[in-house]
Length: 74
Figure 1 (cartoon, rainbow, N blue to C red):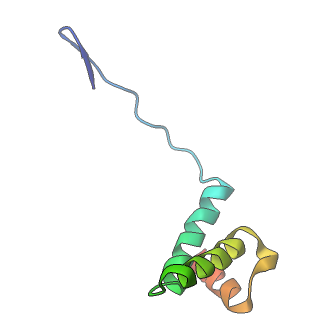
Figure 2 (cartoon, rainbow, N blue to C red):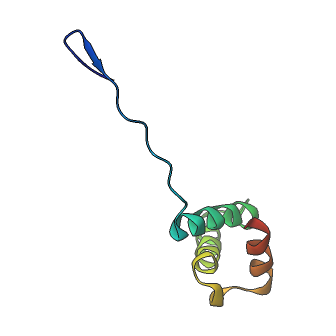
Figure 3 (cartoon, one colour):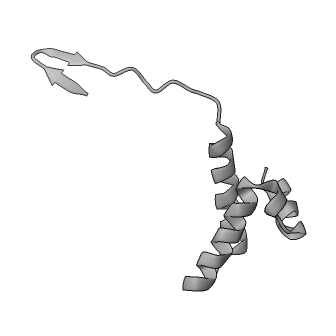
């Protein structure tokens, strides 16, 4: 809150808005990474994360197992 003299100026709260498609894909990708890539280190984790994020953003680049997990997460 900003204070100027004896008055306190209260900011307007952030308004609600619907989730965008990109935000939805990022949320789904994060959940998929957490489920699939858990316990991997360094280069293996990076490779796993890249594959999962490609699947989250592009339906045609998914394996069958990743598609099933993506449908569960939705």
